[in-house]
Length: 397
Ligand code: KET
Image (tube, rainbow, N blue to C red; front, side, top):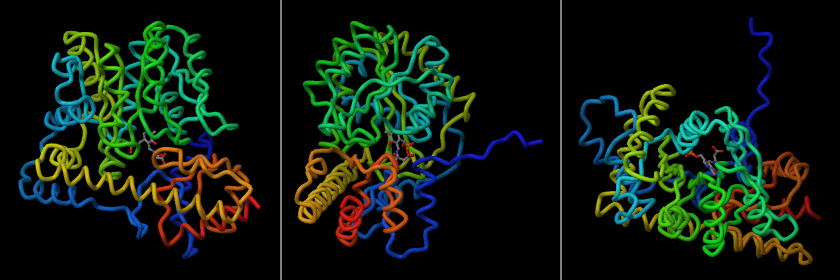
């Protein structure tokens, strides 16, 4: 019956993380998956989230289904976090937000909606991008193509080439953009570059789809929402999927959202309605618990500042590890330029290591990087950074 079912080759990130778990070597180092680990190598339970959970559990009662679009307090809190409480589009009722099963779920619901209402549109993603973008959107039946992004020669952004490509894109193409902390390269647009992008989006009637999975890991919680607020202020209609996996260390709770900024409130009502229909067809309604934690943290006057300070501490620790790795590697291999570790933003560094070098790192040294050469810098700590630098120096040397 199932002879035609081919073997699953595995996922480049999740399957590698599983392989790490099974590796019996005690000194193995996990720099594969985009998860923030603390200096003891553990996934933190943030004190703000723990306090929120105590309150939520103390108040817990019956477990009804949530509405298809999720909990109202969660959705409002997300809008305020992303757009700002005083945002004109939010106040005008032009922004619809649904609670999603991780931001992956938001990308999927958005992709299904786009396939239905913009069936001719092509999805344009950066070259390179998060591996799962292509998988999710192709899974929605969309055609996925790339626009130029990363410049391997300089370690920077091919911004002119990116703009040229978008100027030549079909009208109503969907343009997937990383709002901050680009995965996998760590190379982001500057504010000035975002501003230069706006007229191109307008002229070509392109529809931006922002992915904001690392809010707070770039320059700050507010700062990392810059692109979201700029596009809204410019009157554009666009999508934004955001995640609490990383910013609240809530990976397994699958907490995210999808927001759509619409031209007017009447269209927003229908967009929300069709989002609900999409959700009903997929999984009916989102789970209860994680969203309650997020809503508590975001709206509680004591917990909110606690969380903001925790995000600063996580960001600062990554920065410290970037500096340490840079310094040790520069000392070991003085002829080479490792400044990209300092300039790239967020959880990841794009190291330029080849797939074969990554295989060697894994097999000979137990150091796990995605085969694209992406390193999750948030997996480094004071106990493993020297060993990581030595292993990298060995495969480069
Ligand atoms: N967008 C981006 C850019 C992203 O890196 C991730 C996760 C997600 C969305 C999905 O996050 P969610 O937990 O569904 O809200 N990235 C890491 C984990 C993974 O691949 O699933 C990673 O790149 O390692």
